[in-house]
Each structure stands twice: as C-alpha cells, then as structure tokens.
Image (cartoon, rainbow, N blue to C red; front, top):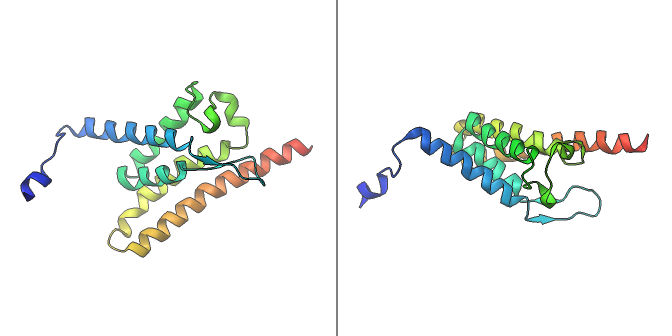
Length: 152
C-alpha cells in the first residue's frame, strides 16, 4: 500500500511545475470572489491571501512568486480575475494595487523561509503571519498613497 501512495503520477517535473503554477493562479483568482466588504476601507477582505501564502509554501519562493506574477499579469491583460471582476491596467491605480504587489512579495518570502520552520508548527505559523504582515504592509502603504492623492 505504501508503494502506491509514494508513486508519482506525473513524472515530468516541468509539467508538474506548470500545473502547480496554473493551479495557484486559478485558486487565487477564485479567492478574489470570496470577499467580505469592510465599512472602513475600500478594500474588501478576500480569500486570496490564503492562496498566496500557500503558493509560496508549496511551490517555493521562485515558483510561488511566478504564480502570483502570472495572476497579476493575467488580470492586467484584461481577464476579469481581480476582486469585483476587475481587470486591466487601470486597476493598478486603484486602492488594491499595493496588495497585488504584496502578493508577489509574500509568496516569495514564505517560499524562501518556510524551509527553516518545516518541523515546527509554531515557526510555520509565525512565518505565515510575517508574510501576511508583509502583504498587508504593501497594501496599506499604497492605500495611504492612493487616499492621500485624492485629498489633494
């Protein structure tokens, strides 16, 4: 039974990586549609953050960042995969643009440092919190710039 569980289904590593990247692009896209509007900010709470952090944890720093960069590129290209079915380059001048940059940085960060805490659940939890803090900081900085420019 153990030999069956350890058998690789896809032996081509490049194809396996491509499927992983595409899978996390799809999950991040679907996570954009699971949202909770917040009264005090124009940015809703979404399920995307969960998939962003998992992409870095499962795919590693480079491929995790590539998956999130692919998500941002597809949305910028016109595919309606951003929150509230948004898309296009104009989306990068809106309130959530900083969070999109944070997606790439957080996936890279968690992928880079997850190897140091693999055996310790508390360390993994702390790494996820730090990566989430990085993502939220990027978003908050851009949100401040965006809201500050509207007051002028």
